[in-house]
Image (cartoon, rainbow, N blue to C red; front, side, top):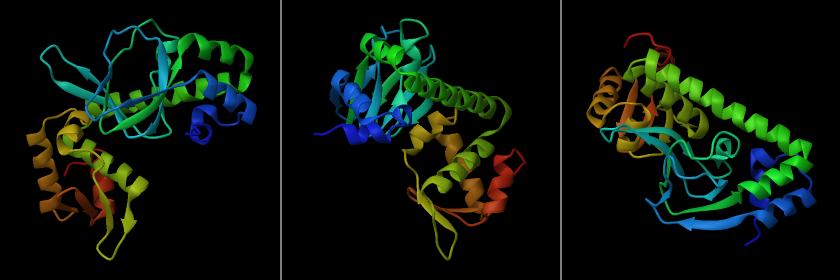
Length: 230
């Protein structure tokens, strides 16, 4: 399979010439994981980073009691674990495939050697790390300053912007992860998430049909996402 088109779609490698993309392909290692496979563990030695070609990966932490907090869901074209190349020698979290997943793995030493020769790649790496830093800041803000209804509303607003389609009833889309995984990402438990969904539904703000969500009152949902009480 020709991996170069997939590499060109990755923001980390934008602006690179065909020859440079070919160099990247030359140092990458293709790996496949079945659904539910552990890609790496927290504190495991970090020997490289990954680009998702197909499937999805969750990055998460575990509390001493075993409670899971999802930090990110990684989709095709996105990278993960690149910060570990420069900050310490171990991965700071767990990574697990949410579906059958194919990734390209870039060994640390080979990739760092390419960066030394390519200023554009260095700038792209800085931009990528800045992106994840903003995501972490947003996550901390959501978990510390907003209640579950606000966090859920923000998630639904973001997801509708990415994959929603307009209909006569409102904006329709499907949840992209299971509700138990969504609860983990929002820093809550499934029962609390279900109650928050039910409150939004009972107020006529959304309609829930299995995984399908329809936003009926977009402005009301947006107000709740900003922390205005339901």
